[in-house]
Image 1 (tube, protein in one colour):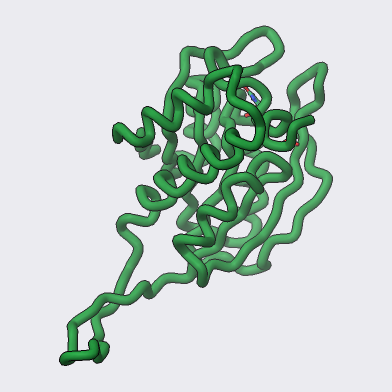
Image 2 (cartoon, rainbow, N blue to C red):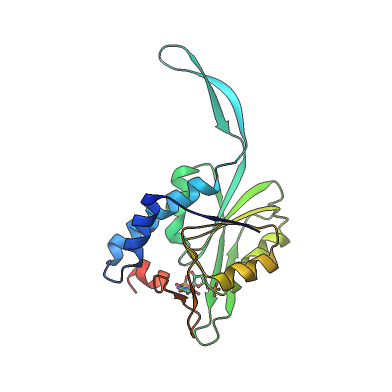
Length: 206
Ligand code: PRP
Ligand code: URA
């Protein structure tokens, strides 16, 4: 599995503010957008492009245009906080959704909704879920993607725990994961430490 960790001063500054318990939810949303832009740029760095020309006001310029089918799949609900940034950078992307929720007592994910394009075999698929904790949600989503023939899957997580990375590597050995931080571990409720708390609650002020 390829693990890519954002190393950029702007990412570090954004993460510092996202982690801060005193950051209110309106700022949290903006910061989530900002870090998602940086993750998206990194995760799309090697997408195929084709050459062409356009006319500038002065003369013809050689250009490169994106030549890939991108599909963004946010995991409800927290992953929706990453979607706007992704689409701002990749406006041609298709969008699908997985609704996954961890049981509060067991931390085991269950799927309550899915609406994903049926054939993903020729697509670059970007799974958007800010927190990779036990990896149960990501592994479940990966199963759904494999059923639809996805071959090129990239996981974008704002924070990842070592336990989640290990679980994902087992479930999808050739996965590529892009994250802004690999944290120390999980607490007894399977929240990431130090982490940034419950992402969905902080994003939606709940
Ligand atoms: C969070 C998060 C991930 C999941 C990660 O969602 O957004 O989907 O937990 O945990 P895991 O790696 O242990 O599976 P949650 O279930 O809290 O739902 P929410 O997005 O609706 O708040
Ligand atoms: N989901 C969250 O929102 N935060 C965690 O730390 C783990 C799962």
